[in-house]
Length: 101
Image 1 (tube, helix red, strand yellow):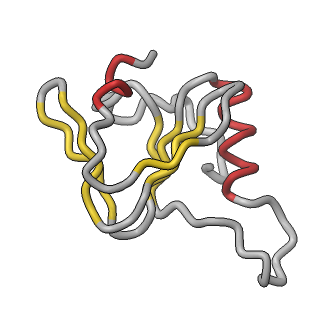
Image 2 (tube, helix red, strand yellow; image 1 turned 120 degrees about the horizontal axis):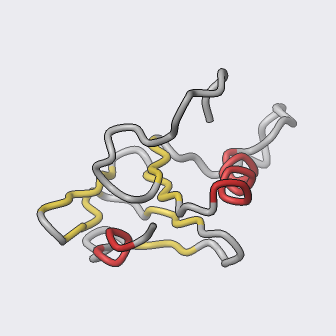
Image 3 (cartoon, helix red, strand yellow; image 1 turned 90 degrees about the horizontal axis):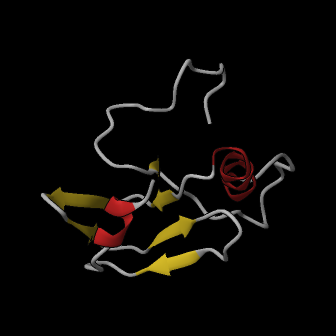
């Protein structure tokens, strides 16, 4: 999440959901006791109600027309309001996200 509140989260409007790049799992061994990435994303979707796709290092979302495929060597994590988080394996078709609003 940004340090300063931007005028819009529309970004480039390439996809109708938010992408959280460089997504990291909470590290239980860390000395940092602030908010985790998961907590921040969940706070965001409570207010904005838009899905957030957490892309881990080494992953990307390849979008061509109405198709979206997770590429890379790690899973991605999808956060949606009022739903459990879902993990998706590499090469999963995530085209359904393109129809999210």
